Amino acid sequence: MSGALPFETPLAEMRKKIEELKQFGQEKGIDFTDEIARLEERYSQLEEEIYSSISPSQKMHLARHQQRPTSLDLIQLIFTDFIELHGDRLYGDDLAVVGGLAKLNGVPVTVLGQQRGKDTKDNIARFFGSPHPEGFRKALRLMQQANKFNRPIITFIDTKGAYPGNTAEERGQSEAIARNLREMSTFGVPIVCVVIGEGGSGGALAMAVGNRVLMLEHAIYSVISPNGAASILWKDASKADQAAEAMKITAQDLLEMEVIEEIIPEPKGGAHRNYEETASAIQSALIRHLTELSAMDACELKEDRYRKFRKIGEFEFAKAEQQDAIM
Image 1 (cartoon, rainbow, N blue to C red):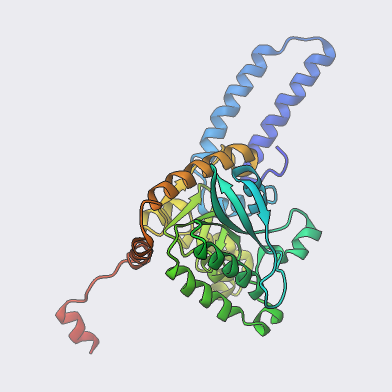
Image 2 (image 1 turned 90 degrees about the vertical axis):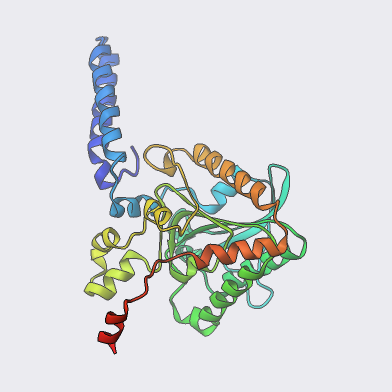
């Protein structure tokens, strides 16, 4: 198991023993079929035990796995005839955001995604998947084009947050995010957003104002990254695991709170174990939701999007005696 996470160590060790026993049997001409079968059965049991009870902090590490499929990986597997478009027509081209035209099951769509790197060099070029203002403005330009030509919009969310450096602030980071939030709420075409890895802070929300927000099974989505929350609460970013346990960031938590509409299942062990299976599950969900949304006209789509976000959150009115006590 390449790239095994700490909680997967028992599985990696058992898999290593199985492979060693197979190799030894081949070299010595000894039949270990029964022993290998017993180990394989135990491996399956252990795998079920581990992956059926993954904690929020463990999901955080799965969502950040270096081998997890990126937006471009999934775009190539889910869509056909993808043509990537570049630039925001104002400043430049942000490689942390990719997007363009494609077809989903033969239907023309505009697809966008936040893109992290595959290695150190690529991560530096893509700012580790954290967009600058020109990235959000590129996304907005393509979404406005989609709205003009009545094409559904699909976005893939995978960022720890918007780029926090001076260069981003100088070019209007907060304005770019706010504009995306406003404009996305007014589009008269279906918008489906999928959190494929980590959805963090305004950097995620700037591309996630959709009629439907879906999440992969082990993705996370939160108002701030666990590392950022730990830095604020305990002045120690290394306590990110502790923050993750308390923040309700998993797909299961967010479905219960009605922040998202659906959890898309991942292969056992995470999306990085099988790109094709992951892409197929996402594709099926996208087709199903877009078919439903395509039956609505522009006004109904806007109203549907409005209702979705208005219903998020719970509150209750204080009783009269409580109000008097506060006053």
